[in-house]
Image (tube, rainbow, N blue to C red; front, side, top):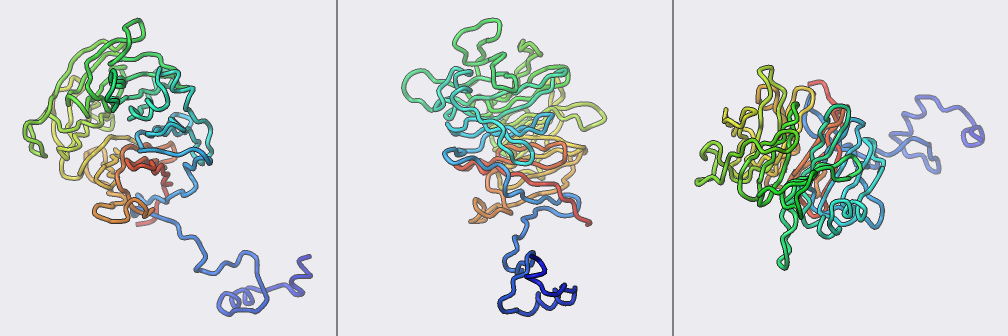
Length: 368
């Protein structure tokens, strides 16, 4: 067959001629005009170069993302995405983009809500490795329902199938696996190595609470900043949206809080005593993820920020601030709300836009 198409074997010189000269009636497999080649979308420079995987995170027909809430990764590099959507409420992919599971009605039943109520209250996720097991902590915002009781205002711990193991906050009744706690609108959770649990009430009271591994309350700090801004009183907040136990420093772990609309990070010790403020390299920080000596910060101000273990700026990625096309330009961010990094150094982002914009960026370092 090949001999029929090509009566003689083409040399390298022949191929070079054909790339520059049109040959009537001859099509050579594998030779694509430059104008038709797909250009890879890259962000960053040097070691911190990342390439968009445009095929990752696609949903089948009939499903769609809503406003992007949370994205986390487990030890097997399975990626969990939650958004303000009824179908799916949660989507789980492998790192190559294969859709493994979707949770909708079955998940809503497990958390005692309808899918509409899950959509209305969905917010951040946190994966915690505790011993040999892994768990997901969900935060629920307060519902927008204007009639009847307000739903949401909970934090609940589940297994990797979404079954509630413990819930705290606006629970129906207290018991061995549930307790009431007066949050007004919680936004994020972090868990320390000793099992202590930290929760920020970031859309509500601006309080930060610490519990032991059994959810026994230890301490609450915070409150709303009377004079918002980078210079606001330390230990007060204006949307304490995200929280993280940073273990990058040799001196020991610290609590980082994304004080989003004070445009800063507040740093505390594990007992929630104030230590310092970081305000130079962030705009509207949402939350955190750490990987191999670096702290990644999805910033609602249209960028992803990477800091090193000493809090020094490593990179600003995909800065779309002020760009009219930052919702559609694949090289820009609009409103990064959450992110995570897999074991290969690839990162995943969801954005607070009505189509979620769940994306993966492969780590593709280039020589500086």
